[in-house]
Length: 353
Image (cartoon, rainbow, N blue to C red):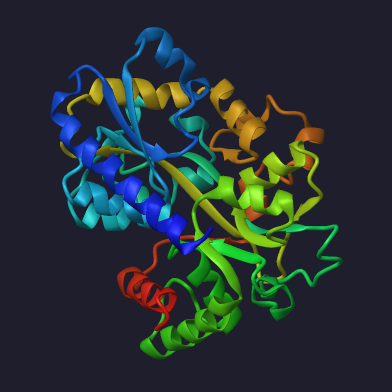
């Protein structure tokens, strides 16, 4: 993606946000305002909700949950949002959330314990700050017919041989985390000296990149055409390109894939709390999780969803049915103590500093 294209996209996004802010007061009070990643608004994910409440969801999408946090903090007022676990403490610190009563979540006990028991989820007896719904991996997707037998390492995204044909994710909890791993630094708690090491690693990568982006559709198109030969992506891109017959591999780097978990949070000033609970319950039904697995290659938070998908299909998707098995071999993206400082440093590096 060119710089001019990114500026145009940013302008369109800003215009869309301005519209969302201005439209919010006029939205029907009985419609759930849902703020989520692009692609997560599909009606197949909440069929029972749609049956009970036809045309009752107003969806606004974001490209990254740092962006989502900034917009909510700035005054956008959804009822329900869909950030990832590593950001929950940050949302909480700003007083943006209200606790979710697990007694009202029908399938709460069906959620894998490893996600139910994440430390920053706890909000008191029987209360949580987030209901986990999806999880997956971040890794390198590469053209296996062009990049032959590469070392299984994140270093591929720093390989000068592929300069101009590499892309990485424009998010502080992705590319800087990988740079930290390669620099031998903990991504989640670092000293100023260690952050300097991460910055140096990012500067080493910058001139080799085609783009920093969260636009996975453009990344997939560029990988398909050969404009890109390797890119940092999520499971869904691997699933999509394989379905198209594009020869790609989703790498298992020796330093570890990144594993993330996301879910639903209830905003403090939500005007539609009952609808929010109905929506979350619909999303936790097995058929919803099945659709998530089969459409995007992401993991659902409940075993019941995995039980509806064959072992053969899960193998093709490189998705073990037990998230604990995945986490033994990957790096779980948890809260980052220096998130704000790291974000500022990353912006400086991207700008050429």
